[in-house]
Picture 1 (cartoon, helix red, strand yellow):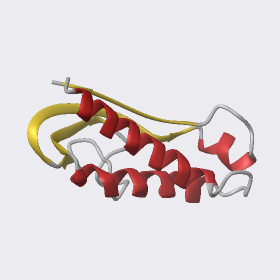
Picture 2 (spheres, helix red, strand yellow):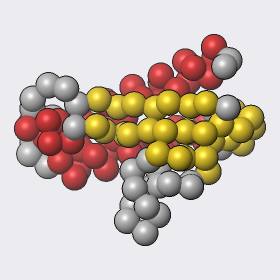
Picture 3 (cartoon, helix red, strand yellow):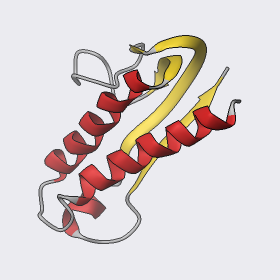
Picture 4 (spheres, one colour):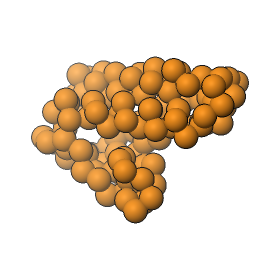
Length: 106
């Protein structure tokens, strides 16, 4: 994997984590999860890569973005596994161990 692509993926998870952190301890897990997903979804088109989500936020009928089968970007093909906010209850309640995660593979 290209080192620059890896750094771009780090940047996307960082943006999702920072967006979710705005809701830290405010008791609204849905808002925290949505903020993280929205931030992540907004940045994917800015990197040169084409990824199909194989593990994501849910089925297309259930979520607006980052759903299974969604294709993001253009360029080299990758499979993407992600969770914009793993641990939305922890985030909403202000406890530790909420994370943002992305894994990509050719």
